Length: 188
Image 1 (tube, rainbow, N blue to C red):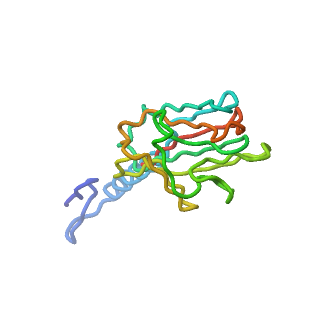
Image 2 (cartoon, helix red, strand yellow):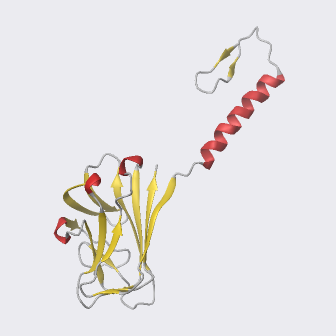
């Protein structure tokens, strides 16, 4: 009787005598391997940032992402659940000039400014924006919003050099309310 290379499952030939215990042992190994796969999370919450006070005027909301091992993930997504009014500028490493964008980074407004994250104008509803900030094989910071053909980048900033992300109102009259939440998720 031969065994398979990876899981040592029985491989029979015609003259072999197949025993119930051999068959059951193989099934037990398969069952255990499948259970291990189902228990392994594919999407993991890496960090959650909650706004604890209104961010308005020139105020900035900082998010420390230096603890993320970018190479350990195939994709990393940011889920922005924002409340307030107006638009927030997203940029890396305390450098608003490092962020450039093409398209709109907003979930439900065709009137938004390019490169901004939209908060609800009436402050009654939650605006939710989810987009990819890392893709395996990428070398410089990029954000992609899959449902609106959005691409943004921070030229010259590698993922290894990315320490912080920041949200700041794009105009002094705009506000991001306390309770707004940003969740960073990794996918293997």
